[in-house]
Image 1 (spheres, rainbow, N blue to C red):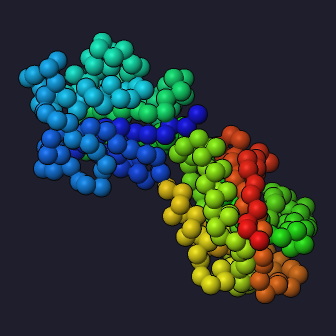
Image 2 (image 1 turned 180 degrees about the vertical axis):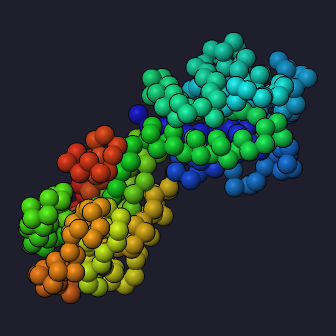
Image 3 (image 1 turned 45 degrees about the vertical axis):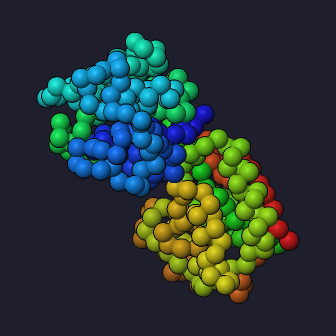
Length: 337
C-alpha cells in the first residue's frame, strides 16, 4: 500500500520541507494552514495547495498561535510523524500541541523521530508500512526554532518516500519482429560478457508509485488509447559509464518526443531518461574491461526506425533495479492501432 498524500500546516521548516518532498516525488499534498496563509517568514507560497482555517486558534490551545490548523491536520490524517531533534530543541508549543492532539484527542498513530538519527529512514518507513498509512501528517519545528531543519527533513523524507512507495518504469515494447532480433543480440552479448539478460524496451519514464497500482494501470490504458502508434528514428549507437546506459541504441521520436512528454506530464513525479530515448543492449559497470567499440563494429546493421506497439508497467520485486532477474511486468496495454 503506497503513501498517497502528505499533509502539513505550511510553516517554514519541517512543514514546507514535507510538502516539497511530496511534490518532488509525485505524492499528493495538502492540509490546513492559518488564515491569510501566514508563516514565520511571511506568507506560505501559493505552490503549496493548502486550505485556510476560518480562525487562528483551537479552543483546546487558545494560547498557541495557529493551533487550529495543527489540530485539523491531525484530525484529517491517518497518522502523524513529528520530526524533532532529540538534542538542542527549544521550547516549541506548536509541536507539543500536535503530539497531544494525535495521542490524546484523536488517538491516531504518532511517531516522534530525530531527523538527524542515522536510523531515521528505516524507522519511519517501517512505521508507515506497519500502520498501512496512506495520508500522513508531518509536523515539527520552524526554521526560526531550529536553523537548517527544513533541508534536513526534505532529504530525509525524500528517502523515506522512495522506500515506502515502490519504484516503477513505463516501457515501450518493440513490435514482435524487432523485439526478437534485439533479444537475440542482448542474449548473445550477455552470454559472452556475463552481463544481465533483459527484454528489449525503451523507458518512457520512471518514478515512485504515488497512488495505488490500479490507478496507474488506468492512466496507462488511457494514454495508450490516446497516443496511437509510436515510431522512433534510429540515431546510431551510444554509450555511457552508468550501469543502465553502458551500450545502447540512440532513438528519436518521429515528429518529436511527444510520447515522452505525454507520459511525464500525465504521471506526476516521473522523469524521462537523462540520456534521452534509447534502447539498451548491455548493462554493466565494468568500464574499459569490455571493448564497446569492437562490439559495435560487429553488431547487426541497425534499421532506420523502430515501431512500438505496447506499453508495460515494470517494477523490481525488491525495489532494486540492479536486480534485473527480479523485474516484474505488472501491466501491459496495446497502443491504439
